[in-house]
Amino acid sequence: MFELTTDYPKAVASYDDEGLAAAIEWSAGKAEAGEVISVWTSLKSNLANSEVLDGFVRRYSDVTHVTGRGSSYLHSTGPVLMAWPDMDGIGELLRSAPRIRSLCVIAWNDDEIRPWVTATRPVILGDGSPWQTLDPPLDPVVVEALKDITSSINHNNTIKAGYEKDDVVGTLLALKAARIPMDGKAMQGWALAHGWSGGNPAQLATYVSDINAGRRPKTSRQFRSDYVAWLREKAAGAAE
Image 1 (cartoon, helix red, strand yellow):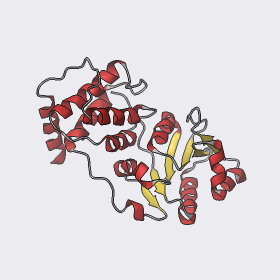
Image 2: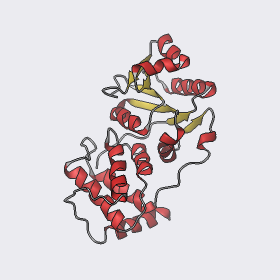
Image 3: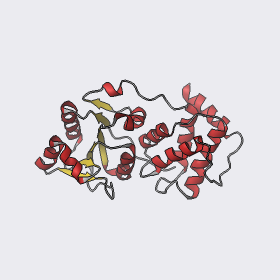
Image 4: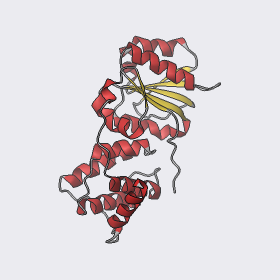
C-alpha cells in the first residue's frame, strides 16, 4: 500500500470579486502560526491578471507566489490558493501534497476542472451556479478498479513504463473487454481527488482515450478471467 495525502480541506471559487474575496478569506482562515499561504499561477506573469491576488501577495510577508513553470513543488507548508489551473496543473501541484494544508482553486474554465470538482466535492465559494450540475458518477466497477490500481502501484513512479504501466493498462483493457464504460477525464478527476500526482492522472486519461478509440497500449500484465467479476462483487458490496 502507498499512502497518499488527500484529506486536507478543498474549495473552489468563482473568478469574480465575491469569489476572490471569499477565496482569500477561506485560505487565510486555514493558515496556522508559522505557515505560508502559497498563491499559484501557471506563469509568473499571470499574477498581474488580478489586482486583488497581486496585492494579496505584495501586502503580506507570509504570502508567497509560486508558479507551475518548471516545477510545482512548494517550498513552504500551508494553504495553497491556486488561480486558474487546469487538471494537469493540479496534478503537478500535488507532487507537493505533504506541504499542502488546504487547497482553494479559483476557476477560469469551469468545464476544464469539472471532473475534479465532481470527484472532490469541495466547498463552493462565490458564484456557485456553474457547479449546480456536475458530471455523472463513474461506473462503480470503474471506481473499484481505480481503487485497486491506487493501492498497488508506486505513485513515485510514472505510469508510462514498467510495472505501473503494465498494471494500469492491463486493468483498463480488462474493463474494456468487459464493456465497462470509461470516461478518461472523469477518471483523471477521480485520480486527482485520491492523491495521484504529477503527470500520472493525465496519462491515465490518455490511456483511456486511446483504448476507447480502439488502440491497445502494450502491457505484459494478464488478469484472471474472473477479475472484472471480482470488481463487480466489490462494487455491489460498497453499494450496500
